[in-house]
Image 1: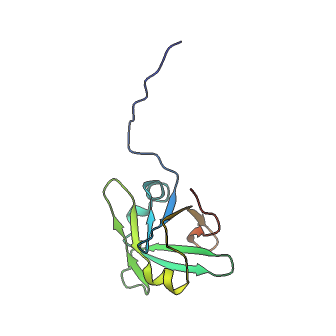
Image 2: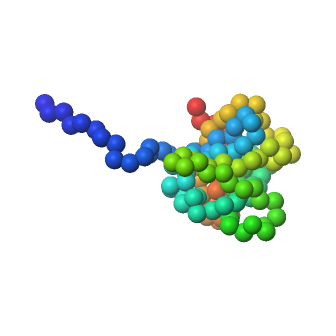
Image 3: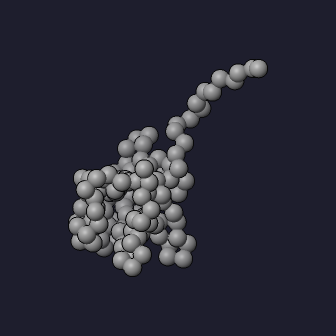
Length: 120
């Protein structure tokens, strides 16, 4: 039997995930940045679907768009936005950091976080 050594050729390969942090921020991992090309945006607007308990995120470069949050990108990592007022307004639990999958909804042109589907 011949063994083949694994050598990492580039950064981490991650499935697109979103974390709602206990400090009131929403973070997008490097997988989400890469998969959806989120690094080209500077701002995000948040939406909430009460009936289905989902958060919608619209990324934009329009600095004059109402209700936007500035994205904070960490080199070689993900990006995050401040969402404390949003989370409190809609009474979304952020008492502990929780991860979710991130999907794109073509019909609504929003990136969607289904709050009913927590990840470990």
